[in-house]
Length: 124
Image (cartoon, rainbow, N blue to C red; front, side):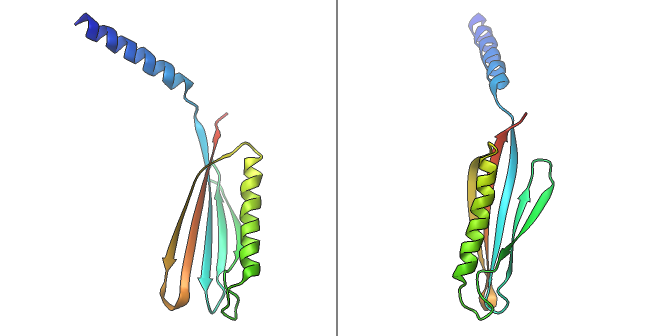
C-alpha cells in the first residue's frame, strides 16, 4: 500500500512539473478559398483569423479567365500572395503547424479549392 501511495505522489509531482513547463500557444489560421468557375472566373479570397478572433480578408484571383481558360497569371499571383503572407508571419516567429486542403467539385464547372494553414506561436 505504501508503494502505491509513493508512486501516486511521484506521478502527481511529475505531472505538475511537466505541466509547468508546457508552453501555451496562440493559434492563427490562414484560409485560401479559390474558385474555379468557367463563366465568371470566380472571386477567390484569403481569410486570416488572428488569435484574438479578428479577421482580415485579402482578395485573390479566380483560377480561370473569363474566357474559360486556366489563368496561369492568376495561379502565380495567388501563390505569391499566399507565400508572401505566410513568410511575413514566419518572420514574426510564427510556426507552420499544419496545412490541410480540400476540393469541392461542383456542377457546371464550378469547383472550390480550400487550403488552410495553421500557424502557432508561444503565448506571451
